[in-house]
Amino acid sequence: MKLPVVILCGGMGTRLREETEFIPKPMVRIGAMPILWHIMKIYHHFGHRDFILCLGYKGEIIRRFFLEYELNSGDVMLELAGQDTRQLRQGHSIEDWRLILADTGGHTMTGGRLKRIRQYVTGDTFLMTYGDGLGDVNVDAVLAHHKRMGRLVTLTAVQAPSRFGDLGLAGGLVRTFKEKARTGQDWINGGFLVCDRKVFDCIEGDETVFETDVLERLVEAGQVAAYPHVGSWQCMDTYREMELLNRLDESGGAFWKLWESAAGSGATGRSSSPVARAS
Image (tube, rainbow, N blue to C red):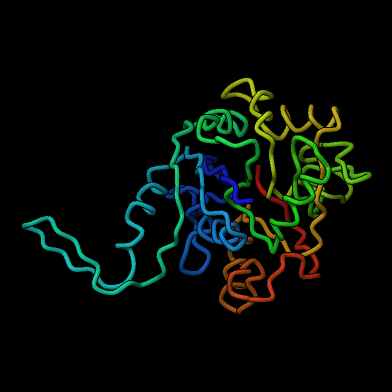
């Protein structure tokens, strides 16, 4: 089943201010390409090609990147008088992606951003993630787990320091959800979610925070399943984490590049990196 992928790209990324003062966090580069591109390539590896990008802070930079995608690589000839542009040599492959670039507001919360793109999700199920986390996640397995559990939301659970939200898991369901707990070490929400479109009915408006206002209520109702990811995962929440991802990319240790390995099945058995996503 090929599903639309909703990616939250509108946050200000204040903990990575060294970069996000000038560009939105999803456009911070890992190697030659923005982290957003790497995330989209993971989903594309599993056959998902339709993306809905929820834009906000400096969203025009994301728009420009994709509108000029072909021209920003290889060799280009410009005829200024005739305003003609022609690509002479392609620098990188042009992905067969279809994108909806949705303006979801500069200060809208995560739930509100989802609510604003409701009209673009036509089926009963959609994929969702954040614009700052990478992993060798088997998207097919997450989707199969979602179907098997029959809940409104399935999230990918990863293990990380508890300064991020803790998940209490039992019987394949999320039993407790505490966003950004301060003590202990447990499973946390690593993104790579599968959602039933009924989730939209749980969102009141722009001020709704998906993680606290929606997920916590659904957890209480027994409607959030968890797919435990035992492979590698890393968010880009700080400058140090950005440097780490770039070192991995440069050294050939980019565990998320499933598209570069025929053996990439998602759950590789590597230990999870002890860092969680930014909300």
